[in-house]
Length: 104
Image (cartoon, rainbow, N blue to C red):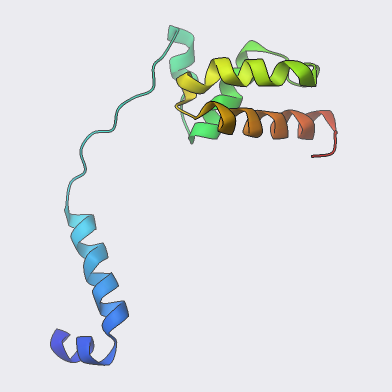
């Protein structure tokens, strides 16, 4: 039956087979981001950008932080959130602008 299906719908059959193999194969453990304090451990849930925002909000009042300080804050927290510094700056600046009602 799979041979007939492969003849009729090769791309979807092969991609389905690939997904089945990937689902059955265990993945190696991923490295964990560095944690600089015990309190930050609880804030590392979610995606990398969510972690960055949670860490920044835990250390700073993002509703009133000057936009000029966002770059420095993001660069400091980028390694903890396991983000590239430029991605961290873009993400945090966008989030702070949204909170403060500034245009993106």
